[in-house]
Image 1 (cartoon, rainbow, N blue to C red):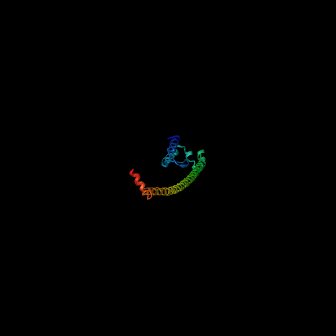
Image 2 (cartoon, rainbow, N blue to C red):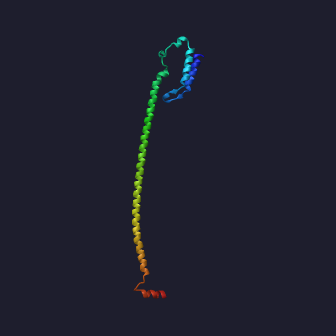
Image 3 (cartoon, rainbow, N blue to C red):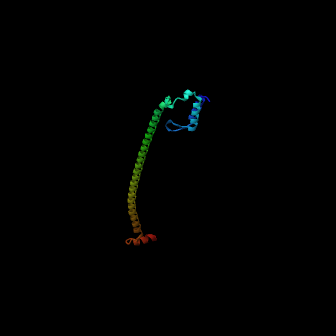
Length: 156
């Protein structure tokens, strides 16, 4: 198997890896190690003697710490936005609660006022009813001074 073919397969394994936070991927380690061994066997002897420490990181590898820092900063920014949103929601809930309390107080005051008005009306109506009943009682009693007249009026 040629080195290029092994590299293509290795790239495929990385592409098929599972995405993780901050731009990382989880790959099948056993499959990667197997492909690295195949790559070593496909390279000439001189290339296989190069120690891993002597290899310079590629451009994406050098940028990885910066990308991780950027991703961390983005995560912190979103967390701060989330915290601000939570604070705003808590403040909104507090304002709604205060408005509901004020509405309850206004309703209670209106109910008390209505009760006072109705009590006053009840008293006025009670006095008026008493006056009406007294007047009817007065009319229902025979009048001592006009008793004869009432009898004569009813005979005619």
